[in-house]
Length: 271
Image (cartoon, rainbow, N blue to C red; front, side):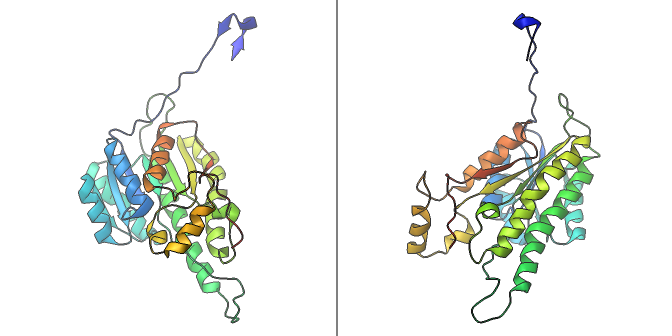
C-alpha cells in the first residue's frame, strides 16, 4: 500500500507457522492421501499422530515416521476425543495442525434401474465423509482454543479438510459422494470466519483423480479412460502432491476459508 504520493511504502511482514516442531493430527493416515501427508509433515519436522479406523494401518505408518498410531472411528465423537487426548498424553499439547483425509467412496444411483432406493448409501456416505469431518473439526477447534498463540499473527492452528472435485463435477451415481464433499466445501468459509476469533484457519483441498486405494483396483482400460480426460499432466495425481499442498497451506497464513482444487485442470464428465 502506498501513501504520501508514493514517497513512503508501508509493507506488512508475512509470518507463517513453521511445521518443524509442531504436533500434527492426520485422519485417514493409514493409507493414500493421509499416509502421504503424515510422512510429509514428519519429514518437515512435525510430530505426527496417525489416525485411522484400522489401528494396524495407523501404527504401521506411525512406526515409519516415529509418530503415534491411533485407531479411531471419526464418526464417533467419543473416539475422536479419545484420540486427541492420546496426543496430549504423548506430547503434553494438543495438535496445531489437523488434516482430515478419512473418507469413503460410494457409487449408487438415486433411482437404480431395478428400483431399489439407495438411501442407506447416502446416509452412510454423509455420516463418514461429512459428519466425521465435522466431528474432527469441532474437537480440533476446542483443543486449539486452549493453545498459546504463536508469535506474529497470533495463530493457534490450522485445520485442512478434504473435499473432492466431485463437489462441483459430480457424476451420475455420485450423488451421495458429491453431496458429502460439497458439504465439506460449503462449511469451509463459515468455519474459517467463526474460528478466526481464536486464530485458527480452515481450508479444504479438492483433489481430482489421484493414485489412492480407491483407484488402485481399477481395470487398465478404466484407468486409461480416466487419464485421457485429464488435460495436463496426463496421469493420476500422486499422493505426495496432495501432501505438498497440505504443507503449503500450513505455512501460508493467507490461505484461509478457501477450497483449493488440485486436479490437473480436469472437469469430470457426467458419467
